[in-house]
Length: 128
Image 1 (cartoon, rainbow, N blue to C red):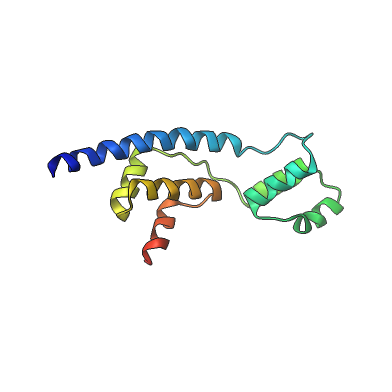
Image 2: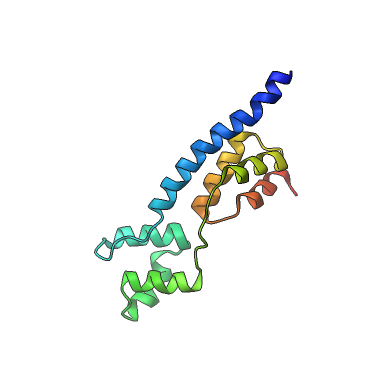
């Protein structure tokens, strides 16, 4: 029984290391597209980062704004706080919420993708 308890922190740390590597890859992909990117690429970015569809962006496009201008404008309205994922954060989330390490990874994945605090997401499942 004590071997299992000693292994839990090691498993959590190993998974946290993988999560940190995955998280930095996601954050690298979260940058705005280049100015010459196609409309489809920009629309996908606007949908993913801001939840806006093409019809939501039509007034800005009609006013003569280009995609980089719209992205800057939206960033000024809804700034993306820099998100760093540390091993301590991951271990704390898993221990404090009673989540399994795999559930904590999923909370962090969704948190990074949606720019939402993973600790807040962990309370949704528990009904708190």
